[in-house]
Structure formats: structure tokens, C-alpha cells
Image 1: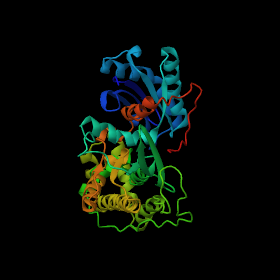
Image 2: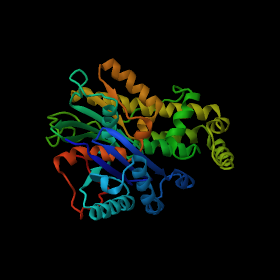
Image 3: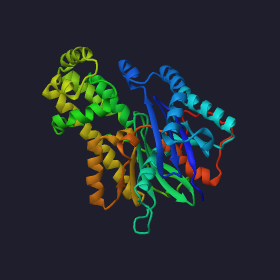
Image 4: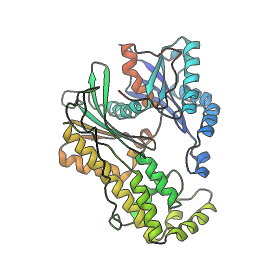
Length: 388
């Protein structure tokens, strides 16, 4: 069939994004407006402020994406927008704008699950590179996808039937998401926001074996699946928990008298407008650097270990690791090393497509475009939307 150009819109949290993607496999444009600088003083995303910034940014971001693609509104074949999960107010900005465009242009509108978008970020880039295009390099199923970010830690078993994809959630966090744990620990240690990238960089300067964090122990009263989505049969859930390690870091700080050094670091860094890595290193003592490195090692070991255990339990043929935390260097290295030992191919999106973007939303919309799975104009945002 002829190429289809889909305009994707993403506003689920603190990035306002728009992109044009051709037939689910070529990024024609990809524009992201980040609100990080605005939320940094608060140590996290403030939902009301995020919604207001989306309102300011949505029109210029979409216009820029179209201009970069060399397209106008009429030359777009369909619009795609994130329906959820995410912040309700933030989602509504993108959805309202997409509905108005679809109505005015008489174009089909496609509602996309944000988590499915992260999975399709991997597919988009691999197809753009020519992967999965021949019998020798085809995508083998089932795919086990770890979606790991500031708001999500999920394991999905994915299958494709024709143009349609189906998903079964075989594991999720019981409390904090992995990225949330990174941010909270960074806040405890006065390392700024967002914490994940800072901890990733600082970890190379500490000893990851200095502090021992016990792995989380989760009881599964409902360990066995009973159908639904991708057939999993009588196999176990693989859940995560990260509130415990955050508490363990706090206890370590208290027991080893680190609070004074942390307060000094907070004051010193507050005098620097945009702290660089060397500023953080200069204001971190050896014990803090070792604590950071040990925390990251424990997080990586848990994510890699549980994901590969799930891959064995569910006979996964391919592994995807995606979401904002997938940009973490040690996490990528851990998955590459351990997956190679298992003989399991593993794929990551590039770092720009690991974090929230609209190219992944447009890519995830393409199978729905082919099957005619369009959204009515009265659909609404779903902050807790599940992926099935």
C-alpha cells in the first residue's frame, strides 16, 4: 500500500512532543519540548505546572514537527495521540488538541497506549535500520518487553497476529517504579533532579560492591495466571518492589552520619545554576560515591535478574528493554552481558527514543491505522490505562 504519514502527539507527563513517522518505520521529524528545568526546583514533576506548560507548547511543537517533515496539515494521513497512562491534566491537553485537529481536517484519529509506544520505539528504530526485514533476521516471538521508567516498571509478553499486537502483563512494580527510586535516592543524597542520569554518571566513580542491599522479596498470593491476553498458562508472575531499597539507603545515611555532608552538598550545588558532573563529584565524599554506585548495582541486578528469569519461565525468543531507565549505561551493559550468556537477542531504543517522545506514539499507531482501529472523538484520557 502507499506510504502513510502519521502525526503523533505525546503529552503524558512533562514532555510536549510531536513527530511525523512514515508507515511505522521511518522518523521524518521528531520534536520534544522538555519541562525538566521548570520542575527541577521541586525535585519532581508538578502536575498542574506540567499541564500549563503543555498548553503553551502544544501548538508550536506540532507546527515545528510538520515544518521539519516538510508536511502541512492536509498531507498527514492520520493523527495519533497518547490516551494514557499518565497525568490526567497533561493527557487532556494533547488529546483535546488532537481531537480538534482531527475534526477540522477530517482525518482519522488513533488513541495510543503510552506503554505500547515505548515498545514500538524499539521496533521503529530496528525497522529503520532494516532489521526484521528478512527470514534470516526476522523478529521471533514471543517478545518479552521490560518497560522501565520514572512512572512504570512492567514486564509484557507480546505477540503479533497479522497487523495486531497483543500484550500480557506478567509483572509490575508493587510500589515505586525503578525510575522513581532513582529520583528519590538522588533527592535523599542532594544530587538534583532528574536523578537517574546523575546517578548513572556518578556510579562510575564509586565502588558498586561497597554497600550490600538485599534483594526484594515478594510474596505472590496470586502467582499463577489464568489466561487473558497472550496465553501464559500456569506460570508465575514476576513482580518488582523498590520502596525497600529507598528505605535502605535512608537507613544507611542515618547509621553512617552522612546527613551533614548531604546538607553541605545541597547548599554548595544550590549556588551553581547548572551543575556539571565535575561539580557533583567535587561535592561528593567517597562514602557517598560508593553508596550511589552500590544502589545502582543493586537496581540493575534486580531488573536484569527478574527479567531474564521471566524470559526463561515464559520461553521468550526476543527481549526488548525500553523506557527512560533503559538509557542507563550499566543497565544496558548488564542486559547485553547476561542476555548473551542466555543466547537471547536483546534490543534497546536509542537514548533519545528511550525517554518520552511522539515518534513512538506515531509508530505504535501504524498497525491500528492499517486495521482501521480509529478512536471516536468522544474518547477520554485514562490516567491508569492498562496495556492489553
